[in-house]
Each structure stands twice: as C-alpha cells, then as structure tokens.
Image 1 (cartoon, rainbow, N blue to C red):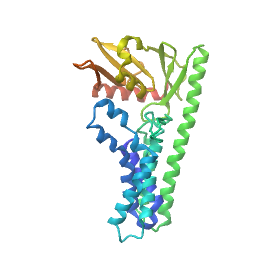
Image 2 (tube, rainbow, N blue to C red):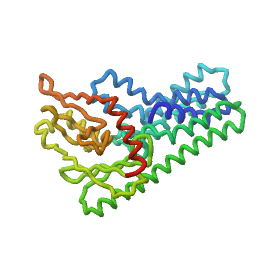
Image 3 (cartoon, rainbow, N blue to C red):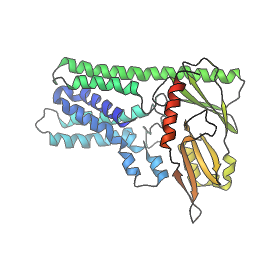
Image 4 (cartoon, one colour):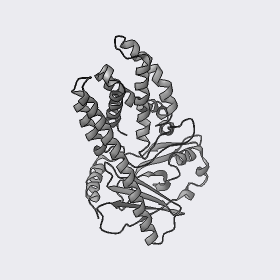
Length: 334
C-alpha cells in the first residue's frame, strides 16, 4: 500500500512490541521498518523497466528478508541506543514485525507480494486499493492520540491497540465486500448465460463500494463494474484479447515475462502500427469511455538486434482529473 499507510502500520506495530520500554523510539523505528521493503523501487531506478517491474514487491517483501534483516537492524539500533533498557533481541523483534507486516498488508492489494520468496508465488487477495483513506485515516488518528501520551500510560497502549483493531476490522470487512460483489458478478453472468473460464475482481480506487471485474471468455475478455448503490443490472463490455496479433513476437522472452507479470490477464492493442501490451489487472481509466485506456500499458519496441524492450505509456494528468470525477459519480450507483 502507500507509504503513509505503511509508516502508520509500522509505527503502531513498533509501539505494540516495544513502546512500553522505549517510548516514541519504538514508533520511530517501527515506521522506518515499515518503509524499508519499498526501497526496491529505488533499486528499480537502476534497472531496465521490465526487470524493475519484476523485482517490485519481490525479495524485499518476503519472510526470508524480514528474518535476515531484523537481527542486523536490531544490532545496529541496540548499539546506537546503548543506554536504553531494550536488548538487541528486543530491537530485532520490533524490526521483524515492522518488516513482515508490510508485505502482509501489501498482499491484500492487486499487485500482491512474493511473501514466500524464493518460491514463485505472488499473494494478491485484491480486496483493498493501494490507497484507502478509510483504512489509513482512523489508524493515523489513533496513533497520534497514543503518541501524545507518556510511554508508561495505559491509555497510550489502549489507543494504539484500538488503531490496530479498527484497521484490521476494516480489512476483514473488505474481504466480506469482495465476496459479496464477486457473487453479484457471478449471478449477472449466469443471468445472461455467459460462459467463462475465470472471474477476477478488485476494488476501484480509494474505496470498497465500487468493484471491477475481468472475465476470461475464451478469445475475449469481458469487463464490468458494480457499486453497492447500483439499481440497474450489471453490464459487460467486450475486449478482444488479440494475442494472435503478436505473431512470432509472442515467443519472445519480453512478452513471456510481461504475460507472467500480468498473470495472463492481458490484451494486445495496435496503435499507429505499434504494439501495446495492456495489463488488465489494474483496469481502465474509464470503463464507459469510447476508446479504452488501461492504467498499465506498455509499448513493445524492437531494438537494432531484434530484441524487444518496453516503454510504459504516458499518463495524461488532465484525463486523470476527469477519471476521478467520474469515479466519484460512479461510486454512488448507476
């Protein structure tokens, strides 16, 4: 999820683990631990675009990484704060939970995490968007209330615990909402007697009221949305897969790597004789638009030796403003 949310979660976990002994230092180092896994984005700046995509939420978001880094960071901080009553083991325990709760939270998003690296398994429950104010804001308020109190205060621990309980309860609620919306899409497909191989759902940006669905229907995809405030039946929009348009390019390592990243939820589009790889997992800017534009779209470029490289399609800031306006309207029903 977003950096602020990971900082809040890390700080709350740090407080729960060691706040009674070291006070606000527990929140500080918990917050630091909560941001460390996302440093893979900095590493990605020095790599080619495709490799950067592949490593994101990879090893740094694994249990192995947490187990390896926690004692190292714990030893460093123990040396810095020798006068504190906390031991090296105490600090290591704080860093482990600060590090590991980061990928545990990210696993609920669409991108997911490789929590069990080196095993080739990406967990993505897709029940919360990467930025969700209803998860983060109450959590942050409870953390601030705890921060203002002395480390020995019982109220401090209660405020922090309440923040953890409320945020976790909301996460459980999003799983329930995903289950209900999934059933709505299933019923709509059954009502229209549509045959399909797979159904994939995820929440729209910034909320869990509006949900999107991708449906694999053979040589095409069906895209749909559903709001809990809807009064009209769910409708489906067809998108051809067009995988055959790639021809021999389909056998290239670049396309295969992209297909693996997209978990085979992709469509090929041709614009001005250029091939674009559209990752369907993150949906479109506006499902009702005449010409669909996908959030993650990559131009396939052949270099001088015939190998393929990719370039992410640029986003239009003005178009994004229109999308947000349309999203707010769509949340409240059709």
